[in-house]
Image (cartoon, rainbow over the protein chains, first blue to last red):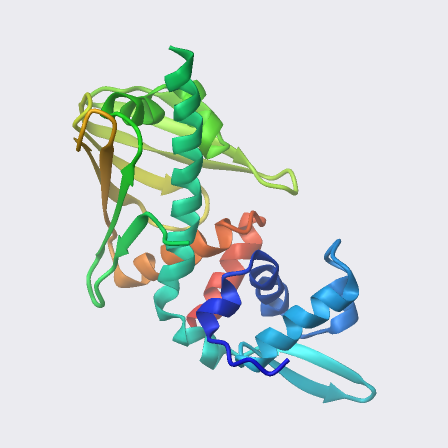
Length: 107
Length: 155
């Protein structure tokens, strides 16, 4: 897997966003990160690879363990967090639309 | 997939403008903001108070996945059915400041409508924090934790 990915693509995925939030507080090993998800370990590894590839995560060797931590420099590049914010609102409004369509047909 | 929601956040300004066109008649779009049981349904929040009138007040309570309750509230400055709601918004007990919201509802066709949310913050920092919380909130995580993370991102 050697695709070039940009940060926005990386944060478009909910699991990857959750990983970023997890490691935001402290550096974690892949195993510790995976323990927070129901997803299979290889899937989490794939997400970690993508996040590392676009430099949102940095790897640090500590003894025999590799720790993942957030790269704040790269996070800053996500211009003011507008895209995720927009996505949140878009999801919310989609829900509104779906709910109201139900009321529409009820009439 | 193209997002139907547009966010306009100019650098160095205290405001944020969110617009969205809905595949719904204006009447239904407006009801989604004014009928408590409908608000609860699409926002996933509990409506404690919602006085749809000038000088009215509102308060919502949201329970996060870890069971913590969060209160959101404000006062309604102006209310014109199917046209506009001007209100304040504050996340209680978070240290985040109050913001002023102008919600404008517009009919496009008989079956479509548009919402324009114009939000004003006291400081640029508050606008930035709100954007970050917006991102994190979408992940459905605990509030106090989000604040810590938002502060961390700020560095």
